Length: 322
Image (cartoon, rainbow, N blue to C red; front, side, top):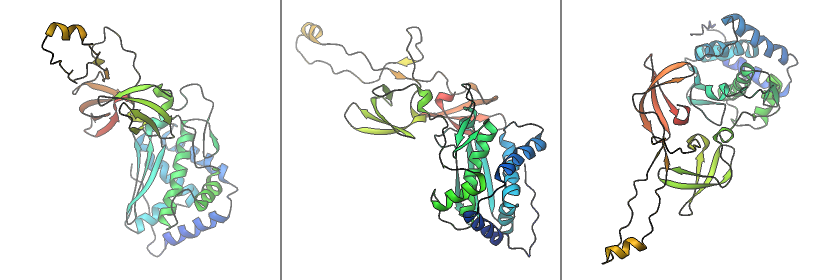
């Protein structure tokens, strides 16, 4: 969906945006709750539903811009021949989204679809982001978008990026967000691992020694420690005797005894059971369903798979989501 923006060549929209942002750093917005509810109402009126789809994200972004920034974000970018892209990405992350600047007046906001879709699956009544309660997935997505739009306007107005005092003031005065964190489920919550649990990765056995917000710290057999993103951990699987496509033997060769007497070496040698390596059931060429759409597996790359949608678009997804 293309967002149509009409600009006045004689107006300096970027300067207007800087003035507005500077105002909200020092002044609280008393009508923020009404404006947040207005965003929901305008989105529902535009699409006759509250359903979240990737194709609707540009319209949602434009609605937030119009309601909170008087349309100055899009007008400034158009006037300066820049670009603003928003992506409702299929990939997962322990972050709910991010905003980046990659050039002069070139910006991108990414929101994580699988993170949002994982919410409200266990009967939760709400989730919290920025210190405010979200009643459903739409509220949560908007709260993430509000957070990233604060980063966006700070990029655009040359303010120091990060979660410092100016960011917190803007997030609080514009959107009522008192924090810059969320309580969305981390990957460790559905991986099923605990401290001292072990897993096999690329033929090596690791033991979990610490959980961090975005990574797990594990010690390898040789004593070295490594940090793994939660998305890279293999899904815990209880091996079954009749499931020969889940577990295979390690390819490590056993050392052979060089004893002169073969009979003695056989009696003394102790055979070591091969280490299991957890594999994924899917193969290249298989069709899988993700978010209600069909994808074809093209290639495996460590813990991720390259898949192709029916329209030819390709995505990288974690294998444990296949």
